[in-house]
Image 1 (tube, rainbow, N blue to C red):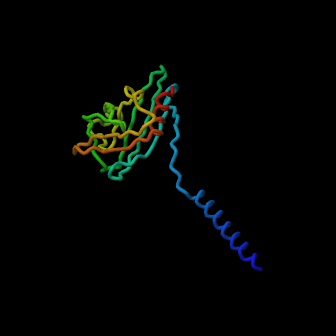
Image 2: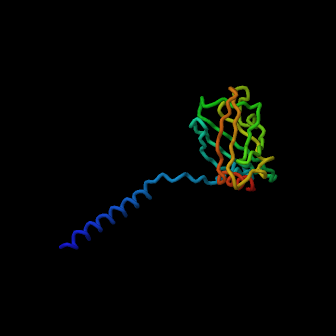
Image 3: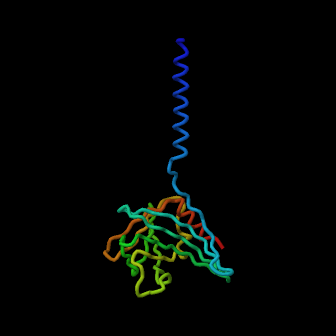
Length: 176
């Protein structure tokens, strides 16, 4: 009888621990893994894209869509589209997007937002698009970067880019 109670307690504790481990695996909110999507826009024209949600220094969320459009003649264009919730920020399209490495090296991407609005006189203020084609080869894959999005009120929206996200963008850019 003296050994019976410790065995029961041990088995109950082991069962509870195993159950807790199983529940934590089933209900743990694993980070979303972005997948590279392939969309056919027209015969012979394909778009490859990566979508991620990034959070700025104020806790506001931004959709970052990196995409490579491959046309029928095999020419490509690689852009980054940033989309904030309405009222988040009014992007200053007269200034470039600045990407800075953790070592202080800065790269700039020109605004290409005029290509996305059907009514250029009324663009959505929280949506911007930037041409990454000229700088994608210079993006480092082994260190994080900061993305500085200029706004009309002269406050910069800062978004952190992980090395994994940068690698994904480089993969998208290499498609086609």
